Image (cartoon, rainbow, N blue to C red; front, side, top):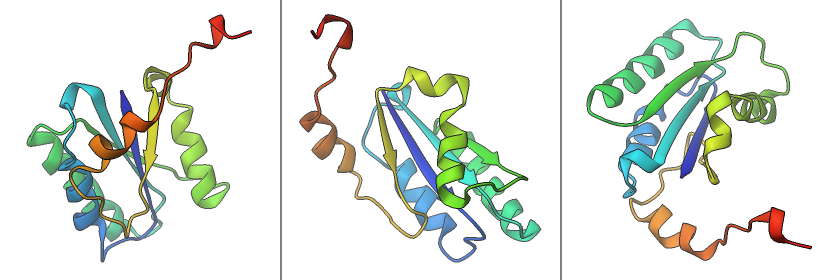
Length: 124
């Protein structure tokens, strides 16, 4: 289970490429959730980003749009706020991609297998 976060703030130039690249990651749709974390204070940017998220959602992506009105902590605060969502605990891994970065479709398949989930209950 992978939670993918894309923090954004007034990213009118790159939001489509970034969201598109993450939505095209080769990973089972039932095992990924994409959070577009929008801290934009520009209403036009907010609308564009929200519309892009809804477009991908209609196309079957497991994606949510989150907008903060109070932007405490800037990007780090945005990421921290998103991790407080009740559903975040259901994901074993978190991948964070800056808004101007477009991961290749095989990014998760190349990286997640190198991590091992440890059951801390049985670790002494």
